[in-house]
Image (cartoon, rainbow, N blue to C red; front, top):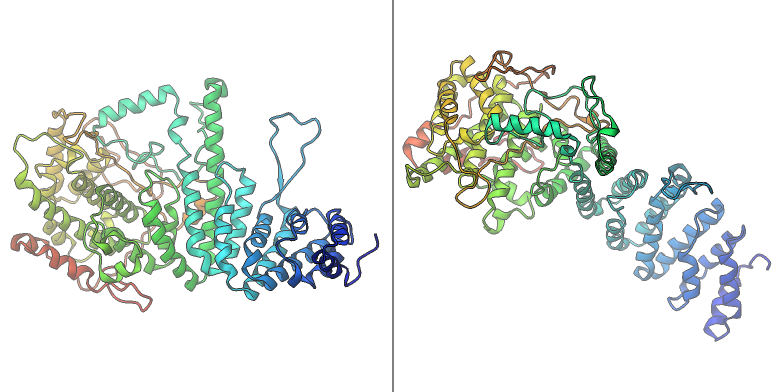
Amino acid sequence: MQAPQSSHCWNAFQSYEQGHRKHYLSMVEHMKEGTDDLHSWYEDAAKCVTIILPHHREFFNMVWAFHWDTTPANISAYLSFLVKLVSGHGGTYARRVLRTLVSTFKPAKLPLPLNAPADAEVEYDEEVMRPITEKAHQAIQQILHLFPGAEVYLAPVLTSSFPYHGHALPIQRYFCQQVLRVLQYCPGLRDQVLHTMVDKLLQIDVEIKLDDFLDDEEEEEDDEEDLDDGPGENGGDGEVGLFGMDIDTPVPAAAPEKTEQNEFDPDDFSPEELEKMRHHQAMAMKLDVMMDMFLAHLTSASTADRRSYFKILLNIFDSLVLCTHRSKYTQFIMFHLCHLEPMFKSTFLTYLLSYTMPPPPALSAFLTNFPSQNHTPIPVVRQQSAIAYLASLCGRAVAVTGEDSRIVLESLVLWAHGYLAANSASLSSYAAPDAEKHALYHISLQAILYIFCFKFSEVISLPGSRQWTNELKLELLVQSPFNPLLFIHTQVAREFVNLAKSHQLPVGHACERILERNRLIVISTRSAYGGSNLLDSFFPFDPFLLKNSSRHFNDSYKMWTPSQDDDQEDDNGSAHHSDSEPVPIRVRPRGKSSAMQIAHSLEGGGGFSNSVESSFGSWGGDDSGGHGAFGL
């Protein structure tokens, strides 16, 4: 058959409508062959898109089955035809055309050798698809320009095309790259697409189980340490210590550690254990690559785009991340944003604090689905998680200054005193210690001590901090009938004792006496509510161990710096050591003290809500730059 004339496709479709299918079917068969003159056929078909209708099934079956391994001229003509098809028919073919274009967001699969084993790993080539994907992006942009309504179809196409978390790393990486590019020229999709992307990151995140890399001997040692340290000792996920085991050089999150004393030997593990290790290492590599791309994308974004991303990601954090149990790395997206813009840090701190007190009106308007907007009760588990994030962010983020930490501490201490006043009278003198019943109080006290441990030097250096610290009346909180030191992380309590004693704070000796007394207390394994009688200590911003993406936190993450007494033996005769180098902390000069009059609030009664209002009433959540609690 000769190359088609300019009217060949038109005549074929017209004859089909008149009941003569021969020319039409001949055209379809020739286009199926994918010969070098295929571009001429698509160029001709593009001239008559208005008469190409859904009942031309044979033609559309051929169109949707297009093979990308053809000449650049054929690909260009095909994509041009798809653009004109949507332009001529609007939404009729928009979804299917966009799905075809998005199918180029995956790398080319290389054929396996003939003698390859049945379980051979498939390899992919991104460079083969890159020119085609580039043309697909251009086609999508043309469609959005000619038919703006196509945006409605593109969002579900992208979200439904996200690779399953079990797909190979090259597929995950390439698709993520292309989706981030789409968000640049189509910002209206950010809400839906980012929600799906973060959800996919979480699915991979929770697949990484570092505890599975411990052998039996290590597990037994950990169990013994947990028993020695008391309830709540196993903070974080067990992969790193709370204070003394921070590392300077991040490693792949799921890689078995090799040391001179303990070389990794595959013979020491069963086939099932080795397979589990490989699976978790593969998941860690996927998450590392995707986090690296996402964080780099946020870093390179303009200020206006960052603010758009932050508002969307804060709502996603509230709906997805906050309620995900022990996610390890996905939450560092918010950590990174807090480093990029001071306003983001201030807003995020205020958001986390709003779980323990009414949020300011500006924040309520900023969060689209925050529970307090419809006055629904906030689950205690979400409040606990928010406080854990608050403490970990204050402790680990260089961007959180001593002044910021002081405001957070004031708010948490004030809330804890209010809780103590409202609940201590109803506590029976013979009531057994209960971690679950008063978990929110215990978590709050742990957060207060944790923030002091990490930011004590910055806080104490602020004007009037000695008097301010005494006004907090922390000794009343630690000596409360709830006995919080029995449940909070033992390392947190011990480090706080070291700091308080070194600065001659009365609360240090009070804590020391309580810790000594608690050694004689035996608690029930079950709480009054039937749950575990242990506090679930979670520090979501513990060291970031993904090797490549950790580069984004070199200047924003505070490693642990031991106190003066940290190298001295504690009551158990053990010593704490850290090889971590201190990270320089920039402390802003503080003008007029914004310390709330906690002592007067407590003595006057009813001063709780007034103090909160004085701290957050002027919070500025818009772009105009208000001057609220955190200096916005």
